[in-house]
Amino acid sequence: MHNKKEILLAFYGDDFTGSTDALEFLSRAGAKTVLFLEPPTLELLEHFSDLDAIGVAGMTRSMRPNEMSEELIKAFETLKSLKPRHIHYKVCSTFDSSPGIGNIGVAIDCGAQVFQNKYTSILVAAPNLGRFSAFGNLYARMGIGSQGDIYRLDRHPSMRKHPITPSSESDLRMHLSKQTNQSIGLIDLVDLGKPLREIESKLQAEIEKHSIVFFDAMYEEQMQIIGEVIDNTVVKGKAFFSVGSSGVEKAFGDFWEKEGILKKRTSWGTLEQHLPMLVLSGSVSPITAEQIRYALSQGFEAVAITVDALESPEIEQEFIENYQTLISNYLKLGKSVILHTAIGPEDDRVLQTKTFFQNKGLDELTIRSQTAKRFGKILGQSALGALREVPVKRLVIAGGDTSSYVARELGIKAVEMIAPVYTGAPMCRAFALNSPVDQIEVNLKGGQVGDETYFVALQKGEISI
Image 1 (cartoon, rainbow, N blue to C red):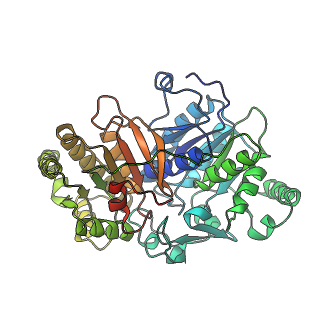
Image 2: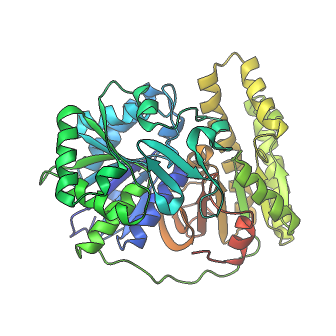
Image 3: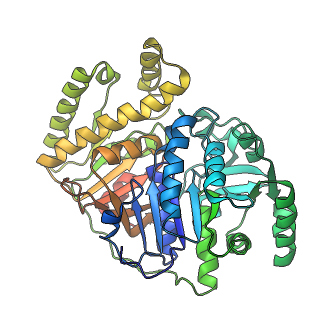
């Protein structure tokens, strides 16, 4: 890698869509950033120069604890070798996790082992995404980049019914205490209203008692303060390990801009209308459901993946070939296509999928991880075959849990942001050698991102920011 600068931050995201969210905040802050799908080899890094930040889009959100430990120890050691100032384990802004799957406590324990810091900071709040933390409790707006209502997390219409990690607890300390034995402290909203030195003094007091410290945040102007407080605890020459949402990138970006280390980027290239466009959706969010229904009302075509496709490898391949043909035929007609696994949480296929795996004797946690893995494979391979026959210039992948699997099936090795479209879901350029996806525009969105016009607006190249 032809890198002459210090790497300010290297992050590991627990899924793909969430990782592009972090990529966006760093890019908008003026940090030249590339997001990889695996910890990058030196050979791959040779394709990029003068990077300020590096990301890795992982899949730990859908992994069991033993899988996570094996993956993260290796990944953290690789990122540590790049000698960055900060290492960030990036999680969803709704703190999606459980003791048995996507366990954030495991990630914290791995980070403590590799980086040997005095404490681990956690910042989940991201006010500009509609994520607010008050006295340790998380609140989330219904729909990122929208004007939806704000709910306490355990009462959020979408998150309390999440198919992989449903939320039943809004107090982040209580939620995390089920995933780690480490002691947990908090810098709360009252603390953040005090002068910098008093906040730093409170943090030092918390570090004396706790090895993990959460930070509240309600307003954007607090992010810069949090970034400064955390950055000031860094020991020179030693990477500091943080956990949290893309609020971490926002906090450091705002602080580094204030210090003149980065210069905020405000101008981007314009996006053109691209017809046809392909959407791959593994999301069961009611927000994505509204987006699918609206797109269909505006001329998009749908191809529905059925549970029958999961029956056996041979049957799965037959269905994939059928989906490829259906997608290709629509694309040849100039029709944008949505290949989907469900339209909202009430879709019959959601229960059918769960029943299918239960009949195979799988437990709840295995069902959750297998659902993302199996549907991710079908989505990705169906698209790959169709795109080899009928190329497109713009692709959208929806659904955090399946996105990492879909991207890998498509052969994507890395992405770089080219323009903002919706907060938390930038338009990117794919780096995917020997794949029909190479160099095309790719947008990755979590289930909570956008309003009902999302897919239609993206097809037109409309920017909402």
